[in-house]
Length: 318
Ligand SMILES: [Zn+2]
Image 1 (cartoon, rainbow, N blue to C red):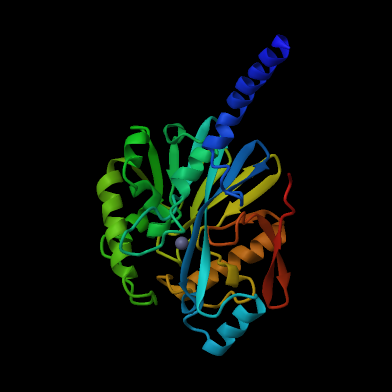
Image 2: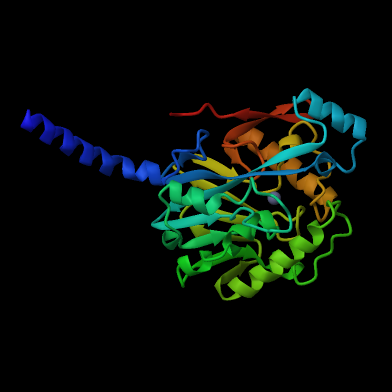
């Protein structure tokens, strides 16, 4: 009897040890917030920063509202607000831990409480901010840099952290031209001030590149322009496998309607050319695609479908 009690206690202690990590890691979340993929020797983890509800006009400010409404209806989506998924990627290659983009963070003026989950969810995934050696920014919109501006985050990052961003992007934000964008009220100011704060806080960490830069073995960032002048994608290649993190070159609507102009695009026509070129190339190579605003976990492939494209989600590998 005594022995049994003893064993039970031991088991209890043991199971406490074992479960302490999952409890800390947010087992209260019924929907998973991370998804892992391997690309040859490269480890990739997609982490959701949450969702960002925006007016549906943002999806296509050059489309007939009735056509836009029909697309939403076909997708079983509500007509007024579209929840943009927000994905961030952590890549491990050659001993480096690379964070690609950083989510929205927190802006008390914008009332977007469902986004900005990244820091909590990185912890849940067992990723210590101090282990991040490099950050790659696809561009400097606040839903890609805001996570690094959350109170206390900078202090937890390494003093020798390198932040890779296209030189053209840094230049753009010195005096951003929003004349071809179509954003909801409040957004232009919020974007400007987030980028300004980011430059102030992280300037000494920036490692600007011109057209492309190999951040780690098989991890190359390429400038595409279009969405913003320095918008970039990250290409992963190892052991014959490939994956492209497309940032904001592709949105959920971009497969059916690659020519629709997204409200945040600085140069919407160039953005559409970048999108079509990238989707064509991915359809040809069969390489995996992950993008910031595709539905989580946003891992899939692209097929050509007549004049447009089709998103083919990967089968989850449990
Ligand atoms: Zn974005």
